Length: 396
Image 1 (tube, rainbow, N blue to C red):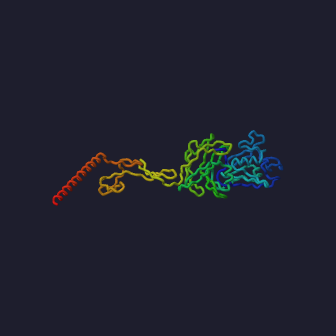
Image 2 (cartoon, helix red, strand yellow):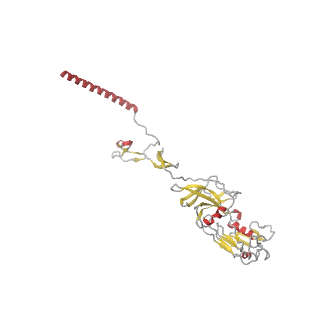
Image 3 (cartoon, rainbow, N blue to C red):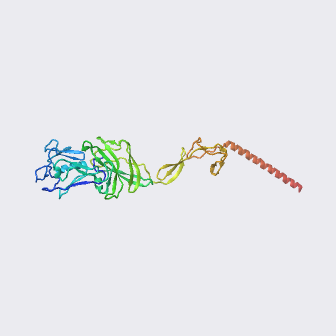
């Protein structure tokens, strides 16, 4: 894995504050505290004020405080831009300020709903009334949801490629399966947060507007501090109902070998993919059939696959000698032979011809005797014929 990204599924929802009349529109450089009409909020944030963004609380501190703006502290002499950057760190999407009106637009982000509360009167000076609660549009909580065509630009910019693999549907049609990784939570946000990534697959290459382009696989991949995968602990992750450009791939199982998925920082912000493979295959035509030594009829297909098509069993008969011989070395059951009894002893030798059980010496001996007998008989006939001819000659 590479450097953190923070966008996850679905379209963004927003909350926009329309700035009340002030000496000048709010900008990123507007100070959080100061004397009006200087470039500051008309009502200042004071030390001790807090603002809670989702589950993270930030505390405003005095200028020069040793804590400064580190961690969950915000210096009261800092700017609106600093506060908005804190919000961005939580939602994953930068708030925007209208240049002409000073209206601030807060985004829910795509991993969770947005909730902001503050008891400070200065919060109203930003144009908001506490609390701010905006539900994200579409999808669900972390680990679920979709990315619509409207969100493709943000999603692409704030996620990283997970590579691609050619998968095959039930008919053997090849389907290009594109993957991306998006970080939905970060341990750097403090207590209660973990490094969590979600895997997305592209369901439509032509999605626009509210059409679904990417779908979350539905599993939170949680990494420990050393970059190793802490959860899920099993080697297989199921992705149900995968459809890519109308081609259904059904439920896919992603097998992750031990140590095969890690999270490490990358200055380039890209994933390093060493190996990604699949075990499907394209449609094939039957090319040949063979029988192996286990009695299985194996078909060889043009896509390189060998598939067991049938099995040959051995049988015996109570009256073996009463089987009826047929052409081609086959035999037929008769009443005297009885029905076939499955489970005969013996074995099958694949790609072999059956050897003859004839006794060659005995058969040759019989052949010689038969030939000699034939020769003797022909001599007898010849002699008898000669005698008949002689008798006829005497009579003449």
